[in-house]
Length: 489
Image (cartoon, rainbow, N blue to C red):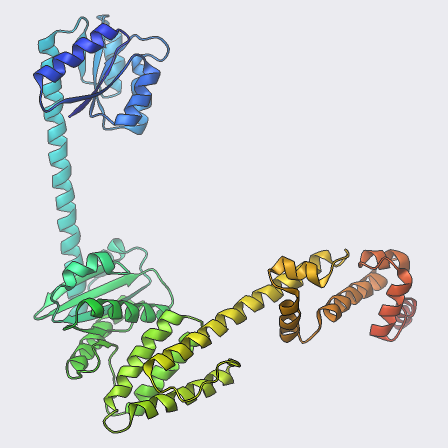
């Protein structure tokens, strides 16, 4: 038990400290303070269990110090010391939960008994807190077991639904994984699981229900696959069946059945150790097509890690057919299909042609190149949006291509090429067109002079503005305004 002594009389503090340290081996005096302000600082610094507090001190008195300390350390116990036998002080102290009140000069026996009573009180509070925590943990454990058992047995009740919502209020999606045999899985899960989970042993299998606040089933499936791959690295003799994620509690039993089916299928296949179930085992081409589609989707999103995970499944699937057909040939055919489908979505690799990938490493390199291309395209798209926004804000001012390139963080040469690819216009043409459209609006909707309009859209020379306007519209600004008035009439 840690104690802080607060008294403005140094001799009293030192005597109290010596007495406590000589009388108790299990009580430690962690600090001293000569006034209320210092007491507040020392309390924050040491967080003592007990503070022996003098009432009358210069500046902040003992009662005010107690009020402030309790705001930050509400569990702290206090023993009040006072040279004044005043019931009013005692009443005020009791309002703040102070139960021990000793008159100065303090009697050693009284102080001893007060410290022992507080120590006993603290020990009882600790015991009750530990008991409450243990009871709460047991309650949560029982509730979780009821949830997962009801889902597995497909026997949902209103109580199960209530418990699920109470235990996991942020839940959006959930899915099952089945580990066979489960070995060290229980030791690994606490540190490696990406989501909250409930587990249950079923024979030689460990059934795990993962719950997440993510809303995208596609992303959760990729996360589940990635996690299974990570776990498999630590569990070389374990198969990991994965079920699809569902939002509805009533459908989670389907996810369990899928994970169980996948686990059974994987146990019969020495080449593959984790993954989702193959619902039509006889149709190898359909399975391959689904894996290729998932791989392409991840590449198109620029998610390299998830794309690599799907490729691992795809590669394992091809290995099963390697006895019938050369694996290198299967990879080559898959690579060609991948290239064709990605090109249909506008993804090309100009510098690294996809040709004859004859090893797993070649294919992974190709996937990386495509993902990098996707990421680059996204960055370019954002740069174009930034450039357009810059033009919209600054079109009234004088600026150059170099100014905008610097603003979006690209070299002028690369920015020129990229801007034209995305807008199908040169930078100068885009800016000019934007300014001419603004000029049209001003000609039709205001009575500003041509000179004023010229300045308003960023041209300091009205004659130059007129020439540019006529070049873009085939009429002069004055004719444009007159023609519109004639049309209106």
